[in-house]
Image 1 (tube, rainbow, N blue to C red):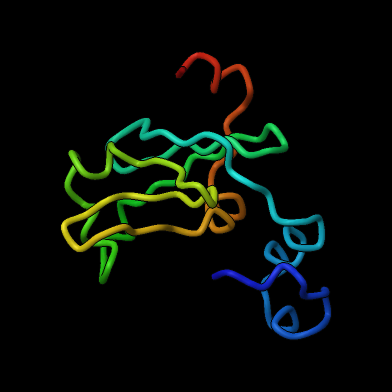
Image 2: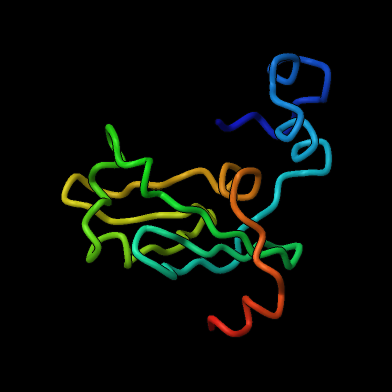
Length: 117
């Protein structure tokens, strides 16, 4: 779920947003600066505030995301020139919300993140 950056908390579309979404956008959306596949179907994304999140796509391979369920495709995740989390598939360029990764991803402690690199 992506909300316009110029929205204010308490105004649409914030009115019905979950508290974690409201808190995220209240503090300002984060920009991903590094992405990599760390496990089958898990990405690690480091954001401009230094926070690294891991997001598991295993349960997300429905609809359009079924295009990235092949390990060879999934492992080629990258950030495009707009800092979107992307894959190239047989049907073209596909991107996924970095906001979703930041809000719902598992925070990786800094020491653990350094060990994985």
